[in-house]
Every structure is written in C-alpha cells, then in structure tokens.
Length: 309
Image 1 (cartoon, one colour):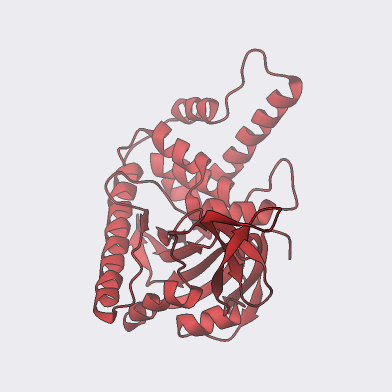
Image 2 (tube, rainbow, N blue to C red):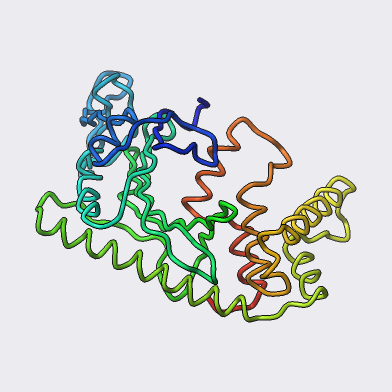
C-alpha cells in the first residue's frame, strides 16, 4: 500500500479506489477501528530544542504503539482519541446504518470511518448515501463529517456542493452519552437534509434542457484552451473533452442526455473513474481525498449548468 494510505479495512466489496483489506462485518466502530489497525492512542509529550530545553507553548502528538510523531500542536490542543472520535457513530446503528471502510492516511495523521445509510431515490435512480467521519492528529483539523452519495447504477459519486444544505460539517467531541446521542441525531438530520436537497436539485437539473451547442459551450469552459496554449496543453484539453463526451454518451446517462443532470453525471463519471493524465503513485489516494473533500470538475460543471444549487 502506498505512502498516503497507511492501513484500511473494507466490508465485503472492494471499494472503487482499490485499496484496503476485506474483513467480516464490522457492527461497531470499535470493531471497525480494530480491523483497520486504528486501535491505538495518542499521548502528548514536550517539544525540545536542539540544546535539550523544553519549548514552551507546544506539545508533540505521539502514537503510543510505535512512538511516531503525528504533529506539533499548541499546548492548549486537546487530543481526540480514535475510539472517542468515532464512539458516537455507534449511536447511528440504531437505524439502518452500517460501517463500510475505516483507515488512516499520511502515517496516521488523519483517520476516517465510512458509514453507509439506506438507499434513496434521486432523479429516478437509486443513490446510496455515505457518511464519512474524519479526524486528524497533526493539528490540521478536528472532527469532520461529509456526505458522499454514490449513484448505484454506475458507482459514480454525486458529492455536489449545494447552497440549500451542508455537505460537510464539523462535530463537537463529548463523552457525555446524552449529548453524544443528541449529536448523532443532529448528524442524521443534516445527512437527511442534504439528501433531500440533492433530490430536489437533481429534479430541477433533469428538467433543464441543454442542447448540443450548450454542452459544447460548457465543455469549452470546463476544459479551456488559451490562445497561447502549447501543443501539449491543447492536446490535454482536447483529450479531456473527448473523455467527457464518452461519459456523456454512456448507456447509464441515456435518459438524462440533453439535460443539465446528464452533464453533471458525465462530469461525475469523468472525475470518479477516468485515469489521470499523469498517473502518479498517489493517484488513488488523492482521488479518495477528492471524494471526501469534493471534486473541482463536478463543482464547476454544476456552476456552468446554471441550475441553482
């Protein structure tokens, strides 16, 4: 497994990004963390200068299993342990939610757990909503949740940035069971709000007609070619446009062809599955990060289609 992904587990089906090890069903977050090799803690130690003196105002976050330094943080920084960060997700299991993947990135500096929710209908398609919980130990960010819906028929991500509902939000960390239960309910409510917003947006986009000339104009904006572009840059942009059109004429988009929703799904297909023009060793992990954080091609396609999100 390459440098960015340290450990990972998945349940039953191999994820589209092709990383990780299959394990039995993981019914609780504790099991998921154990199967993913995340059952370790972080302790804080002083930071020393070259002469051996303590540097005031700073602490190092150290993994207890191997002594790896995960980050240097301010001395007011409070560690959120892996098991504590994801403890409250067990409260989601009261509904039809199950854990699918968990793992660590960047040598343990960031961890995630992916929970699958019941399928929803979006523009006459089955879409499976996923909640992705992330936590960092390097001081780069706290607990975060993001929605990543997957269109079942083609396994495309539909992580659109909607103005009507949050796709990403932060979580408080609490050990109080009552507060944790309330936060779990709030989390599910935000997830439901996003999926409802996505369904409304998809209906509007599926009912907005785009003619061939409109699709051509969107492509020219999506993959522009400057007047002073080199031959290589021109060839790359043309290749992207051609790959987009292959996605646009794919069978699973046929009933949406000629609409804004068809263009957005083609952009999603291109962003989700097409190989990069420079196939670097970290491509799969970087693409996985884009699924969590959002993809520029999908967001730009949404804006260019002119359907209010």
